Length: 637
Image 1 (tube, rainbow, N blue to C red):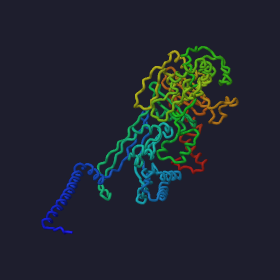
Image 2 (image 1 turned 90 degrees about the vertical axis):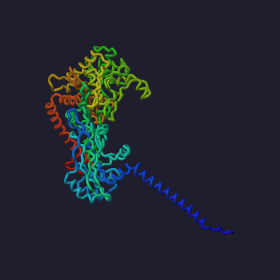
Image 3 (image 1 turned 30 degrees about the horizontal axis):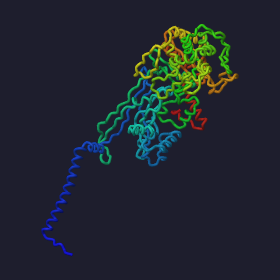
């Protein structure tokens, strides 16, 4: 094998090639570096300036103040008040039990609160602060602040908390606020605002449905720091933007009065201004204190509320459904007149009405009655017979036009609108033919008929005016033009006169206003919740509370020039004339003579064991004692 002879020329050529390759590689790498530097310095200049600024400047988020909810006269219903608070940041905690024990000592936390904090801390996903205490005294706040270096994971801050001056009287109306859950955080695309300690969002009621208006925009405090995080100076802050103020049509004083006048009953009252549909009051009682929810409700308080058979967590004004009972009769009478029934024709009431193998009853033997007396004395037999003649096809449309079964444009997501049945509905729902006994039941508001208190008040307002009054709660919404209903003016005047007779000398004498010159027109109702045996008939107080009849009343004032309409349904209250009618009487009296109404309320509350707040405190204390729990501290009671 021959060896290649390497000459000086050959070596020179090889070296030159290598130099060219190496120089080209160096030039390529240099070009890439220059290009990259140009890209970073020019195209990415803004991005890295922001990153540099964020490394130098830290933004401490400042939550916005939540917007107020006020009544028609500007009185506060839901506002904010300055407060001190303490939170736990789960991912920063080193020894949870030790920290919680120290906080319990410093803040005098009751066992219920310690249990809640421990539970929420164990369920936290790390990003969500756990509320320890709101509305902390300054001394306690200071005690926590000076110990923060020894309490990793504890955050003490100054801010604002939601406050409801009327407390439980507005619980169902406004709902409540609370810290965002993990699900709500994910649903809002991980909005960082929801991570700020102290930020609350609407959970129920108006606080929830009006959240976009009430929340506002967060701000921030900008500070310059060193690479090690040491504060250099404070920079110009970014101001927050408070949430918007929402004005309701509610008269807060009337609303609170009605809530207190309900007493210990399970009930809702709705009062409307018939001239524009404004809702002046709509309390649902019993209720809860939304201030307790804002501070963080304990597990035991939740157990007490959710286990109450009077359902304090349910908005009865819109969410609960009841048979209408005899309050449907004025609308039925209007339908009978439209169908050609002679108002002077009489039906003999013997107290019973046989149909097939069943006997339908009336509460009395009224004898011969015409339409006027049938309304005034609430005779069932008259309506059985006349409605049977006319048929459900002609009855249901009139009742629906008066508001029963209608859903209204109101800022609530829990509204249920009930049922006004007819043959087509029966076939769609139950796949069976309409029977005569269905008409009999429907004629007196029983059977498949279901309504809520809002619909009852709307019916009263439409009978008062002959117009399609639509309820309105937000002052910002325009008043819906009131269209004339398809009713004859003579028929309407006749019905209104008969309803005035109900109060003047009929079944609702207890509803007479203690005001000279102002007459109410109305209609009572007593709706059965189960079939009464012969021994139970007429003795409504003997049955268990859950088996008693519902008590209903609707009315409007003044009779000769209607301005206000109201409806009330008292769950298992018994006779409408004895319970619901006096409730509406006192509530409407407040609109004309507040001094007289308040004097009556004070006497009433004294007879049932004190004011609303006092009775709630007694009830809570009794429940805790019955369940072996220690009494709450005085400030929590």
